[in-house]
Length: 216
Ligand code: BTN
Image 1: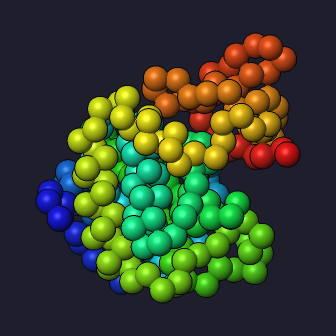
Image 2 (image 1 turned 120 degrees about the horizontal axis):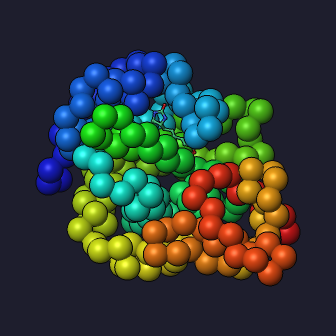
């Protein structure tokens, strides 16, 4: 499994918080359960037993590319277990339109804390059943080891090849979308840094962060 060192916890507030205390490169903090799992934009991330909740501690280089690489690695790992998924920019992993995994990259001192949550055997709460899904029958430990191996391969790739892989799994380009429920346009492309090019009334806007919603 190469370079990573896995530290396993039973119940934590959030693996992101544990990672902040550890701050050692290539350590992977895994927890059975998070009591205060966080999503992007301060949203809550349900993290009961049965899912894979982890934070990978990395030295800061390019967190946009890191998150794209992590999303690709999740999709490739699912594929290795026979499950097809797609990536919504930048890195929501979807199965038939519902989110199965999410990625949260946070900078802390000289590190990037790459938080990844994958819904496996965990229950999906009623209130998000329209939006979220899970994958049953894949062992968490097996998924983790396969994922870390695939992620290492992805990290070895140059920018062009990461972007090429991302395009193989994406389901965003060409679609009419809203960004943070404000800006509406067509997701025309991603640029060399992995940022979204949104076409709004003939103008091209570069979107560096935000939540997309498909409009049709
Ligand atoms: C998102 O799609 O909004 C990102 C979800 C990230 C969830 C993971 S689970 C492990 C790590 N610890 C957290 O509190 N959040 C991330």
